[in-house]
Image (cartoon, rainbow, N blue to C red; front, side, top):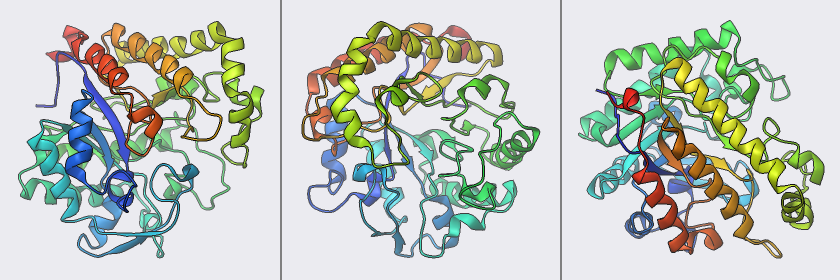
Length: 368
């Protein structure tokens, strides 16, 4: 039976950082320490990249994986060499030892052969996940999993490049029959093989189309919700920030001031989107998990940047989502990892947030 807690999990996103940020001082070089610190802060779940395209090709090979940018904070700022197995199984075992549930996802990181583009059909995608889950099952670790996200932030071209003929192709409409058929076909064989797991595709862009997307095969919704995202507010436009240009200094110069000047407006935009997602959940009868969320998409330890206003926005998101009863796992931000030192070191704040999450009540209809 799929995982259905009566109280939400306090989850964090360690994406591909868990495997790629393992040089001295990068935060994940000692998994025991990182997981112990995670548990100390009250978290009992983590979402990570399982690299299914690399596992299916050769699970024991040492791969070169390229940086995806991301301001050098998620993953590595330069190419790194990684091996997915047995490392993935070792990490899952350490999570199980600490009663930490794991959500699997993939960002389809690029390697020199660009194997991610070998996916031509939803059956190809499903087969890669089949191989990966089979390895986990043979190791007796399937019970550690709480959900499987087949592609991070589908169908955004940065992560779902296999859908497009070129990197510059326009993003496909999320509510199109083409994408609905793809998602259903990719999930079907996995659900047939392991019906006890929840499957999903996480969403980020096209928030106005989320409720119209075909999620009939999903076991859980996984929307990524930020106050600053273009689908939520005009925050980035007003400060002149774009992830496609080198404009991070605009966040430094204007981000906090802009938020505080229009705080009620931006807070309202965030809570309104959370309410819309809760309504979506009620309409389709699926629980919600959110692992990337609440304030800004990009932020980091940096000169003249402070974490206080980020934490305030995140606390608002946590409280509002927890109060709906529709979330079965809630993150406190997408900066909850040891590489974000300014956020990570505030243990008291994390414990306050995770205590609130883990004491919230999930709607009874979702726990049956």
